[in-house]
Amino acid sequence: MMRALYLAIFDIPVMIVFCLAVSGQDRRLREFIIVFAIALVLTLLISALFPARTPLFHLIGPYPPYVPATGIGFERVVNSLRSGALLELQLHELHGILTFPSFHAASAIVFAWAGSTIRYMRWPIGSASFGMLLVTPMEGAHYFVDVTAGSFVGLGAIIFLKVLMLILRRQ
Image (cartoon, rainbow, N blue to C red; front, side, top):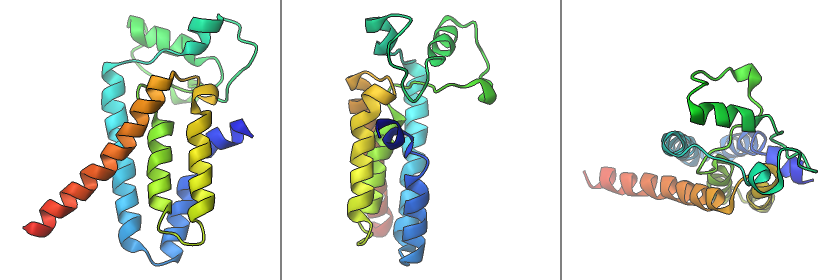
């Protein structure tokens, strides 16, 4: 169940796009796409400055008794990136990349916000988003600070769009 909630990052946005399109909420659909893109760009920019490490290996060791949804191959990739030995990521070799802030956390906030206007899907989308946020430390092998920062990135992206819309309306 935890793994399914963590991997829902791929399913929830499809559901949101479909439901917003079917319900005729074109404006909210555009807002969702913009906010999601802003959250992604912010996460990428911040994570470039602060490469993440996982508490999994730091606290438990190289052979954890539990393998999260991200797998355990990311530690080699992250260490290589941090040392400068790896300069280019191969998409087919990625086993999950940890970021500070957590993009799963940012996405969960954005998904819950976007789904809040879909009357018949508000609770399912909100519940799945909240569940994804809750399992991110375990299944994503994140520190809680990664999840907290990711949540702020999601909120910041929403606030940024709202402020931008207010400024554009006044002009």
